[in-house]
Image (cartoon, rainbow, N blue to C red; front, side, top):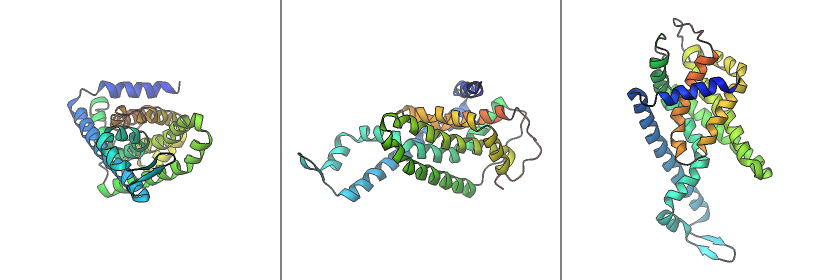
Length: 245
């Protein structure tokens, strides 16, 4: 059953929330997620204001000095609304930053027989973060056509598209720590349906305000488990070569 390893991976992730090592990463991840989300929201609104000026003209109503009023009375509401759209790239950024910490915490408890995986060099992680962000933004801009053309089912298209992207990223990063970039791609192709399904199940709560703050770190842990399940434990503990080449 395609969902069985995914549900098991998520169950193990939820069960580890009380682990101090895991909780520390989760709290840091939530704090950074919130900070990035607030920053992205401010930047988004600033960009709109830069294009429109301080006022917006609405038919039959006239000019509305919306930005000051919006931040005075509706900043929290605005943040919640924008989080639905901005959490996908934010989740992508969080993954690259915290994947090693999350995976180490997960493997220390559930896979103690494994040596600790190599840490990802900062500049390598930054390069991958920028690359994944570029793909996510570009694909979603193109997908806007589908969102508009099929408005009644736009949310399902949104989940499917971003589930594919997030599953691809999360699994690749989790696998690269153990088997290198090329082998990670091969595994991703082999298990693409399960990975897409897991990514979609992750994209759904990302569109739910407040709940979405938990998803990036929990998703990283879930995909760490999923990698181990899909490879059935056949890993060479003594061959940790340069995982980015």
